Image 1 (cartoon, one colour):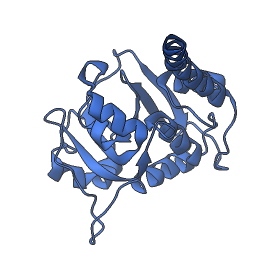
Image 2: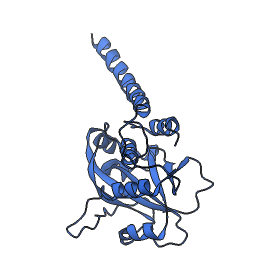
Image 3: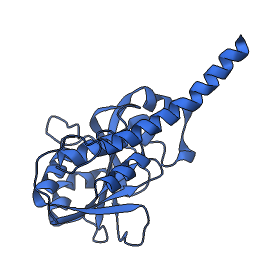
Length: 224
């Protein structure tokens, strides 16, 4: 009897992740509702694939440097002339601030992320990324890009003066984490958030993309 229970438990442990990935692939193909905005080729942006998730890659401009000027006080060198891109990511506070790769995963942080956690936003800068792999580029109209920036802005938790709230956590000497609105969970992970944010900017995308593989599939399926 006990052996049968252990077999069933082991089978469930194997099947659940497979079902999760399969559901993600299905969600990547099913179109989610997106904002009705004209497409265009005004602004080139990127999605940078990390080991665990994707980050937005936004081109540095005088307007973007000014918009995110608050990040300089938290350690992000927004005025650095060699900074050509701003990376923006969202995730679990316990997990995201402690795991830059799969090798950094800690059981407690993983469980907190799966069961539900406060969200954070991560900002970082990058120079010339033209020779790097794992970046998907596509264009947006000015209207889509402004909608994307507004959507990202709306994710920051702010103090009484309207300033975003830094956490004091860092991976390097040119990044910072900030408190974010919303909650992270296994059903609403960072990659699903990325899809929601793209759709809010009028980009056709899958209704649920919980894994990097689902994001990649949705990018290809919708021609981004």
